[in-house]
Length: 271
Length: 197
Image (cartoon, rainbow over all chains, first blue to last red; front, side, top):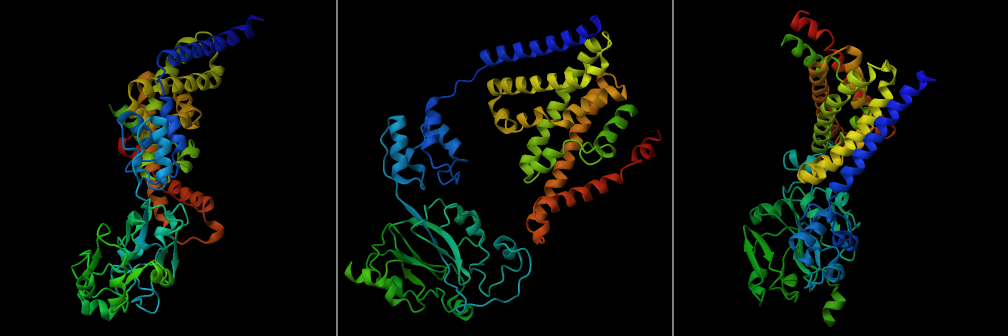
C-alpha cells in the first residue's frame, strides 16, 4: 500500500501546489481590462485593414479608450461606426469623409501592349521587379491583381488587364493602395467623381508611343478648369479633390480621354 | 569549456530538435509562414526551455530521485511545465506588457509543446548536471530558432512558386521540410571532427 501511496501523494502535492500558486498569482497580478475597450472593439468592423493608422482594430480600440485617439479614423466603418464609438466613450463623433479608391491607369488591352511574355511568379510585385514590369509603359497596371488579393470587400477586380474599383463596395480602407507596386491606386473622397486615369510621368511623346490612353501633359484640362483644380506636374495631370466640383469640363477636352468621370453620361446632363 | 561547446554545437546543429529529432513539428509547420512570427515563437521557446529546465531538473533531483520515483518524470514534468508557462504569462502580463504582447500569443502554444518536454526529459536521460542541462536547453532553443528562420525563408520562396495543384499547401510544405531536414543530416559527425572527442 505504501508503495503506491508515495507517488500519488507526491504528484498530488505538486499539482495542488501549482494550482495554489497559479490562483494566487492570478488574483494578485490580475490586469484590469477596461470594459470600454471590449465595447469599442465590438463596434469596429474587425477587418484589421489599418486605415485608421493603427496596427488593427484591437489597437485602435485601445488607443481610443486610453489615449484619446480620434473616433473618426475608421474609414471602412464610416459615420455609423464613429457614432457608435462616440456613444460608448461619450464624445462627439465628428464627421467621417467617405473615401474610395481610384486606379490611375487606363491601359486596357488594345490601348497599350506587353513587351514580354512574362512567365515568372504571378504577382504584380514580382513582375515589377523584372525590368519594371511586362508592359511597354513602366507605370502601367501590371494586372496580376495584388490589389484584388488584399481587398477584403471584393471591391476591386481585374478587367481587360487593369484593376477596376467597384465604388459601391469600396470602403476606402487603402489596403490596395499599399499593395500596388506601381502606386497606381489613390484614396480620394468618395464624392469626387472625376479622376485622371494615368500615372505616367514620361514625356508626352513617349507616353503616346506606348499607350493610346495615357496622359501626355498637353495642359488642355488645366486651361479649361474654371476652379483651378487641375495642375500638370511632371507631364501628368492631377486633380485636387478639394477644389474639383465634378463639373466634367476637363473630361470633354481631354484628347486621349484619360480624364474620366464616374458619373454616367445621362445623369451628368441632368445634374 | 570544450564540453560546453560540444553540448551547444550538438544541440544546435547535429541533434537539432526539429530537423533531427523531429520534436516541435507543430509550431515548425504552423508558425513558420512569416519570419517575424517565427522569430517571436522561437525566442519564446528558448526562454521557456531554459526556464523549464531550471525548474524541472531540481524537482527531479531533489523530489523524485530520493523517493525512487524516476519513472514519474514525464507526468510530473508535464504538470510543472504547464503550470510554469501559465505563471510566466501572468507575470509577463502584469510587469512586462511589451514582452507579453510580442510573446503572448505563443506562450499558450508552448504549454503543451513536445520540444520543451523533450528537452527536459533528454537532459535527465543524458545524465547532465544542472549547468550542462541549462546549456543544452538554450542550445536546443537556438537550434529551434535556426530551423524556424531557415524554414520561414524556404516558405516565403514557396509562396511565389508555381506549385502543382495536388501538391499545393501542406504536401509541398512537408516535402520542403524533409529536404531541409536532409540537409541537417549532413551535420552528423561534425562534433567529433571539430572537437576530436
